[in-house]
Amino acid sequence: MSVYTGATILNQKVITTSDISRPGLELTGYFDYYPAERIQLLGMTEISYARKMTMESRTKVMQKLCEDPITPCFVISRYLPVPEELEVAAKENGIPVLRSKLSTTRVLSKMTDFLESQLAERKSMHGVLVDIYGLGVLITGDSGVGKSETALDLIKRGHRLIADDRVEVYQKDEQTIVGEAPKILNHLLEIRGIGIIDVMNLFGAGAVRAETDISLIVHLENWSPDKQFDRLGSGEQKVRLFDVDIPKITIPVKIGRNLAIIIEAAAMNYRARTMGYDATEAFENNLNSLIKNNSN
Image (tube, rainbow, N blue to C red; front, side, top):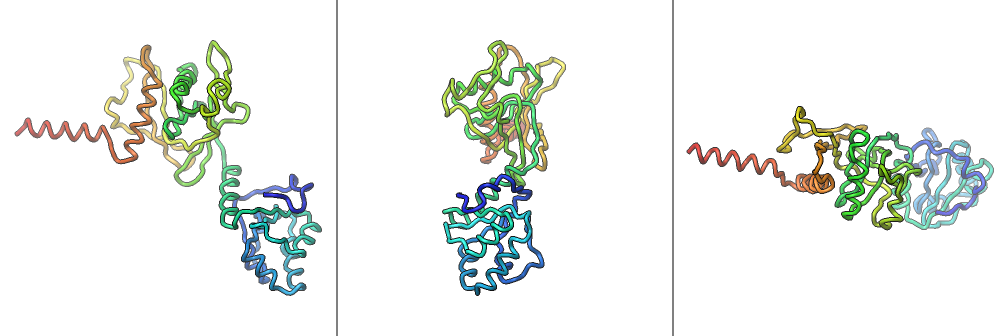
């Protein structure tokens, strides 16, 4: 994407919606409903139609497109030539014009995804987010329970850190929650007794990741003899983040337990479930079959 005109005023424009408008009807003169607050994207169809218009009609329509100063910008795909009338009207009304070498469909898709991620409502959560075998696992628990130390062990086992201590989450679509680190905490991990360590400098670029979809929440809880923990995995829990339910498991923390290996196994077991194999269900079926055989 390159700035064709209006580079000096680009930072003054405000985008409030992820919706993108392709002003095809407007080129025909229909302005009863013109979403001026959206980015206006012109592709091959719009530019080709504009070429066939008379100069007088084109000037009138381009002036009308640029009348409302809340329009963030115009984007022209495929590096198509910018109509002179649009360039003049945009300059007069303080609206930048940008160009991209990508096709209209790809520009539309990329801009929509970017704007949805940037404009989405965000929530800050206490925890550690790690990529384990391609699954985003959010490790939660009380302060001092060992979340960061467990994440460090997972990183040494080849997995990737996304965020430590604070995780910024937002809803990407109807089924996806994305987590990322606040900029100030990128690639950093706090280990009690050592302090702050830079994971990327110590373990390499392959040990970190900018963001990931959150697939599973693992809650670490100090073990207590009075507390009943799920032993078979049949008591499924859910945590609702925005409009999406995320599966949650609770793991008791006790001296001698290797939490990194347990969480790694939990991630693999979750992936097996999503692929159609449920070990708990298989065990219960085997148990029922054994009881039936013994009864006979």
